[in-house]
Structure formats: C-alpha cells, structure tokens
Amino acid sequence: MSAATRSSNDPLIHHWMPFTANRQFHEQPRMITRAEGVYYYNTRGEKLLDGSSGLYCIPLGHGRREIREAVAKQMEELDYAPPFQYGVPTAFRLATEVAQMLPEGINRVFFGGSGSEAADTALKMALAYHRARGEAQRVRLIGRERGYHGVNLGGMSVGGMMPNRKAFSTGLPGVSHLRHTHIKENYFQMGEGEHGADLADDLERFVNLHGPDTIAACIVEPIAGSTGILVPPKGYLKRLREICTKHGILLIFDEVITGFGRTGEAFASQTFGVTPDIITMAKALTNGSIPMAAVAVKDEIQQAIFEAAPENGIELFHGYTYSAHPAACAAGLATLKIYREEGIFDRVKSLTPAFLEQVGSFKDVEGVVDTRGHGLLGAVELAPKGKPGERGFKILCKAFERGLVLRAAGDSMVLAPPFAATPDQISEMLDILRKLIQES
Image 1 (cartoon, rainbow, N blue to C red):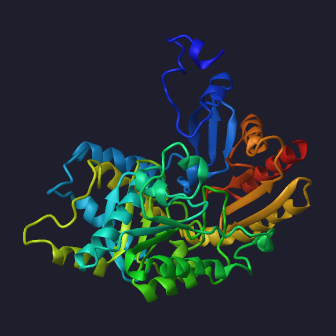
Image 2: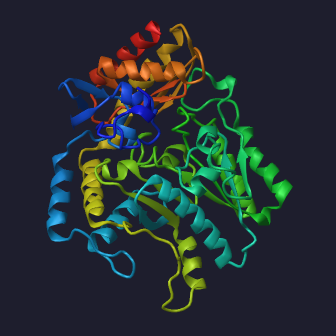
Image 3: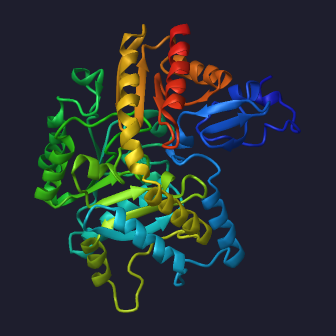
C-alpha cells in the first residue's frame, strides 16, 4: 500500500520518522517496546542486542536506576526554570564536573539540547570571539568531506555528507571542506593509519587561497562517526592543531559520538593528545536518558566575548528554551557519577583489544572491502550490491529479525557496543553480523 493510499486512521501514518525510509518502515515495522541492560525488546517480547548503544548515546546500558531516580527526584523538586537570566544549582554543578573531565584549559561550558544545537553554538561562539577581538572579517568556516555535525543550518553547512545536504540548497556561504581521510593505503587498519597526515595541509591551502585573516574556525570529528567510523591517520589531528595555531583559527572537535569514554578516555582529544579550542558533546552526557548537549571552550574565548560586552549587558545573544533543563542536569550528574565510581573508561580500555581484533577478522569474509575501528567503535565496509547503501540497509533489516540492532552507514556496518556489554555479548553481536554478511 502506498503512502498516499494508506488510511488516515493507520497508526503508523502520522509520525514522520527522522532519517528513516518511512514508506518501507510502514510495510515492515521494526518496533522496540522496552529496554534493559544491553538489550532491547520487540513487540513479541524477544531480546535484541543493542549493538550501537542506541545512537552511540547509551554506553552504560538501558534502565540505569540511579539516573531514573535522580530525574524523578529533580522533577518533584523543580520541573523547569527559565534559563535566560535565571539559574538552577544543578546546572552549575554539572558544568563544574564536565570541566573537570575536559582537557586542561577547556573549562567554560554552555548547555543545549542536542548535538546539532551544540555544533551551531560552537560555530556562533567562534564568530563572536573573533568579532569581540576586532577581527569581524573572520567569517569563513572549514569543515570536512564526510563529516557530520548535525542537521541545523550551520552544522549541515560544515558537514560533508552529500545526502544530508543536497535537498537543502547550498547552506551557509563561505564554507570550504577538507578532503576526508578514508584512503586505500589505510584499509584494514585498526586504529590510526600510517598514511594521510598530509591531508591536513588542505587547511593551509585554504589559508593561501582566502587569507588567514578570513577564517574563523575549522571543525572536525576526531573520529568521523556517522559516515562509517573514519579514524584519523597518525599525526593528522596534530597537524590541524599546528596550522590553526599558526594562523589564529579556532579548532573545534565535534565529540558528540566520541565524548565520555568511547575511545577509553573521557574525550578523544585526550586519547589522541591534541587539544582543540572548543569541544562539542551530547549523547553519552546523560546516557541518552534526557536530551542534552554542551559546548566547552577555553576560558580565554569566553573572557574575550565577555569583555567586549557592555556592563550588565548580555554577552552572547544565543541560547535555547531547554538549555540546562533541570531534569537533564540531574541525569547528567547521575551519569558522570557512574562513570567515575564504576571505572567505566578503564572498562572500555579492557574491552577494546578483543573487540577490534574481532572487527579486523572480517577481512577474510567474502565481500568485505575494509575494516576499521578505534576504541569501542568499529566498521565493516561491504562491496555494494545494487545501488549504494542497498546491501547495508537489507542487512540492518535482517539483523533486527536475528536479534541485533546496529547502524548502517551506506554499506558500512557499524558497531558501537555499550560499555556495559560483556565480552561474550560483544562476540555474539559480531557473530550475528558475520553470518548476515556471509548470507548476503
């Protein structure tokens, strides 16, 4: 039955699902009714392994009592307060705890509701910073091919995933894109590849073309996630840092996926030993329980913006109705407490070697053209069959039937196991995927 002919009382017809083949879903619904630990459950009550930590956002597993109780307690005491000109104590506590986890010097935290909001906030902060310092001509933004920074106008513009852009005109003016780092010399390499650090020199080319005093910021994901887990080559991020420092360009790391332990440290910038000027985060900040995001900046960025504003005047004309929502702050505080008290990041480090070894073993499976990964992020890329992405989508659908929820980025099958998963559960996820690829 086509979408146009479906009855208006069809229970599926009114919800327009995001990033979903809606018409196909109407014919073959994949409904999730509850979750516990590392499992989802379908409408028949059958278990489904959560192979993607929700959308990379539930590393601690589903249904954590501590988070649920903290949110309930907060809702009983204070359900909402306006974030403009008023504050709630938990927002300041959460900002302090986040700052303590960040690289040294990045310690001013602004809250939003999603990774998309965080990306646009970071870009606006970069523009405001240069204007405050008397360099308002710095308006150009540099993104990267195959990058993903959410779906708001700014993030889409600096993003480099073609399907996310082609239906929405050109986006913001004055945006350039570095080449992506997925090169054949690094195929079947777990961790950082040996080749491609020189791709960072694209930024130097843009400096030479447009002038260094016109570029405000360069934004990249330390590990490009939504495009299929692209790990940076050795030295690549360090080279970007050097070029940005040389020319006064702010370096933004989008850590919405990698933040809060996915690479074994609190942030991937710490794993790779490169400190940006601004970091965006979301997802695992609240273990996916309440929508929340944050942007963290070096204190000198905030100070420059503050000093340029008149006394008693608003320094940054930006914010959201749900910035620092009390329930989200309570969820964030409870989540960070679990990370600390249960040694979660050390657990990631202990799970990583076996996970990456198993992902790498797909090299010997017929039809696999690349394997890659870092920390608890792994991808198995398949040779297309039919149109690009068609094979990956079919495997995603069949995986649901076999008891596995995972991500498909085109024909790259992505696994991001919850940190709460056992080695046996991770192996089971990979075994299901292996059988599905062999059958396809």
